[in-house]
Length: 322
Image 1 (cartoon, rainbow, N blue to C red):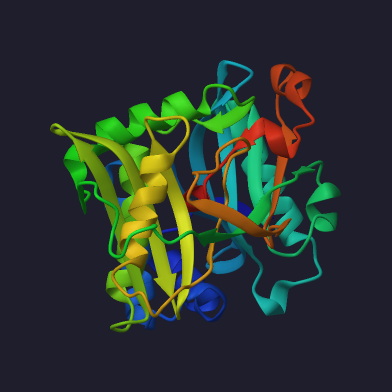
Image 2 (tube, rainbow, N blue to C red; image 1 turned 30 degrees about the horizontal axis):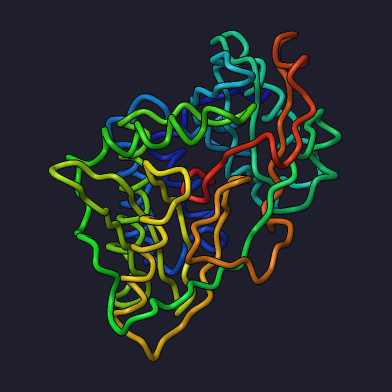
């Protein structure tokens, strides 16, 4: 009978070798290994991210990542089991190993106090719907940033963000998220992890393949708005942003300042924006369902009462995608 095991040592190496071609992200095999190890070494990753495998002796039958998350659902905090990178090696496919693994992971999560399971499916909704998951509509928006009326960047203090800004970013996020029925509880360590993950991917890859931009607008000595943005092969992705002002004008101003550095380049910025948040410098040029389907499954009666969730119920940033 197959066993559920924490993926470490030879088991982890086998999983990383097998999944590299799918999720290598342009890294070398060694950098791909370091990318996962470095995520695990962050304060949040060391206690909230792990890889598990269904094994028969030393043979890996299926594997997945497990994220220990906390969400706020209808004003109440719930523990959430995030599942990602579900993978079955080709020789073992078609035998139900992935289904067995997901079932065991959810049973394990319930014993650890989880009340909701969350995943993002790259293969559509049907497979995980058969495992009891429900889709939550999420939209990818294409954004055009309006140029300032005067030449140059907006007249505002914009500087590179750093770790001293994380408490202010957490506070901005809590204020923005409060009206939504569902959002992650993003504490300092979680925001640090989201930022570190993007920086690691850029830093471990080939020079120039990816860039990570983290900028804040400052008043006094405090960050009052921020933008996290990644660039890959000329495509700009707004990973997350925030503004103490509900209108979001300073976050929009940061984007204008970034684009003003190269006025010949006017890329389309893509991202996930929460309902009701659109800085005045931004217009939405396209709005379509995300390629990765967000899906949830209730693991408790309290979570069942909260479902289903519609798009306007949820605040979820692209930087939180796993």
